[in-house]
Length: 152
Picture 1: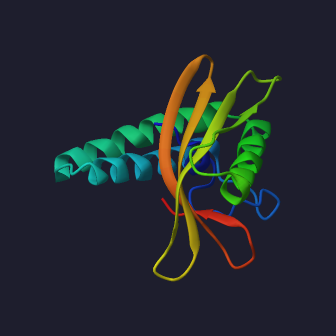
Picture 2: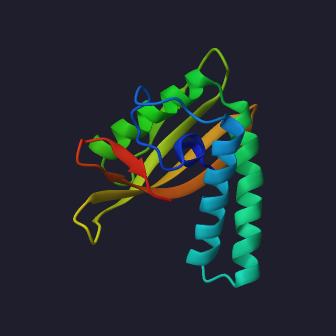
């Protein structure tokens, strides 16, 4: 499961200068757990399936978060902010860090307005670390200040 955005920021805003990140492993684990649980729930999983998805997502997310450095996270965040704000649904926006060899992409898949009137984007994210590709899914909503916040 790709959790790039979730794995980096959980429910933090997409402005990397706003506040320091928690540890990569913790954020990745939490983001992965959320994505795994939500994905299992979305496909009509049982309580056991949802729990398994949450645990598996947490493990995968923690591993990814541990392997992405600050420069990788910064590039992924900047790419996500740009993709959420400017990219048509279905169009992938890539990022890469030649120093680490890590890369990824984010693809907005659906734009909608929340019950509170916020504009939101569902997305799919892919990250490649050490030749291993992981994917995740989630949604982000535009905040009043124009930043994007990962919702799940």
